Length: 138
Image 1 (tube, rainbow, N blue to C red):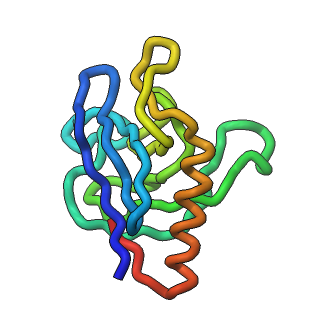
Image 2 (cartoon, one colour):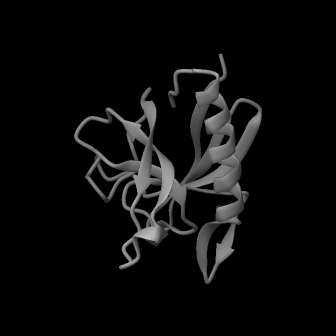
């Protein structure tokens, strides 16, 4: 069984929560909101084991073609629509998880870098697990 894990290394007020996401032997950097008592759209998710499923990440533009497939972390108490998606800084996310190739600084904000490339690799790994009929958990 291939495991998917979300780990956290650093919590910083106003900058976010930074860590890593691992799928098998592949790992990427992550950014989440800081912990705010599991408040919807304002907090990182609480520590726990959660199922993953495919979802569509809707972009707030008039063009529906901007929306894209992602994975959703489900069954988090009191929360919904927690996506793993493209994002670089904490302002890009509302209680979701942004992925990147590494941690860095972007316009004076702590960030994850090369988010689109890391997200493409993440999706490829997860889709391969789906083809193997694996249960997806984080």
